[in-house]
Length: 382
Length: 166
Ligand SMILES: [Zn+2]
Image 1 (tube, rainbow over the protein chains, first blue to last red):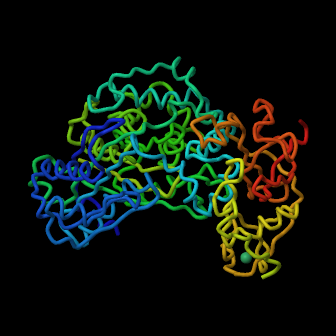
Image 2 (image 1 turned 90 degrees about the vertical axis):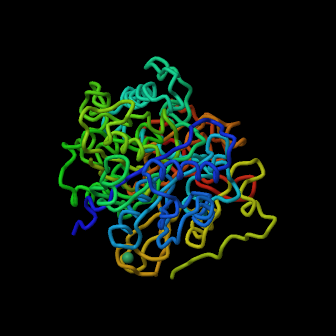
Image 3 (image 1 turned 30 degrees about the horizontal axis):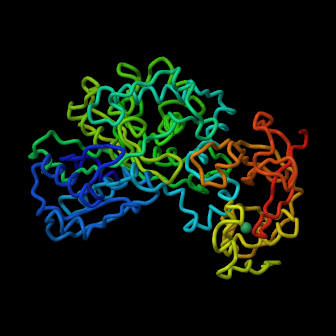
């Protein structure tokens, strides 16, 4: 058991600029981010022998490998379910490296979501299931699907828009500290949040993540090799994916308890193999495509009890000095929305001590992928 | 397997194949497992797939029973009564036909006889009324509703929901 624990580490991280519109192609952005991550690690591209990305990634391993000058590649994998696959890319590389299938793995995500099309606008490629049960009625976008769960959550547990605003403000405030964040110089107030236009009631504009062009990558290697790289190793302490029994994706309306999502499943495995628990996590990077995912994830990963996630956000708990500083580079809500890969890189920066909103002495970080869809998560430690 | 109507016609000119109805709203795009639901809806019947062996209901429809793994299914008629489990009120940006109706409601209705079976739909003032015909301020979680069937412009019938106490 627990053969994965601390046997691999993230040795390099890289990223492109983030913007609503970047001129380069997704393929070019991917190569830039990957080469930056390898340079950060001090590892030549010719030594890369493993790749992992998302099933939604448009540039495949063949294109990446030949462009960056990778060597012979012996492991490549893709993780599904959009942003639910972010941490799984690192988890798959860690598993491959821990079992000797490869030695230098690259995970990446490149996306022109800012200037490209929205997947929900596609009417001709709608999947028969579950779209036949939802889209004819105008439940069209991910935000609509989450708005239904959010209203039920508010109804059951007394969560309010003020709680969702706490999440939006925490992310925006961290973006102000991060010059790379898209919303670095765009202040947000509680008043502006409350006055913002609706997108899908009960969710407003600021409950939604950004639409961003950009790419990120990281490099996973054996722990002993990471200790010889340029930066202190950030160990993959525990990793898990989560597909709960009778789960239905983001329209999880058809089981006994729709508000218990994939986080709960991933968390049970994550903590089972870890040497520490939720109370020992110094800083968290939690997937924030929509603000309600944060209270749901706080419950799922065990930072509070069922129904207590909204109240957890009160009193500055998600801010520096609070119980659990959140999304310290700004997250998907205010740094960039690149399917959650920016959360992985920020987790690494925190444990190197290099964040623009550094949590003093942080040695443990939880990184999560999309809640509400089959998900994944990582516990990182320095 | 008890009565399983054939798949709806999906020739290249049908609106189902095109994915939208004549007025631009999306039509249901049935798969093999879901097709009976739409066939029954066209007859004005709300039916849900159940297991022919252990008789438990399941939704969305699927090839076999997650409880006893039987491939036998039966389509059980529901009373069409339920309660609003939750709802959203979408605003633009939306697909053009929906943007014209926004803000409209999308509800999730839990069926009276099977609360874990929850159907997405719209609360309207009459079966043929538009999606925006009910003031969203009148909606409440827990409000009782009953089914009505609306034939869309493309000839497809979908369930809609009427407030029991408007
Ligand atoms: Zn059965």
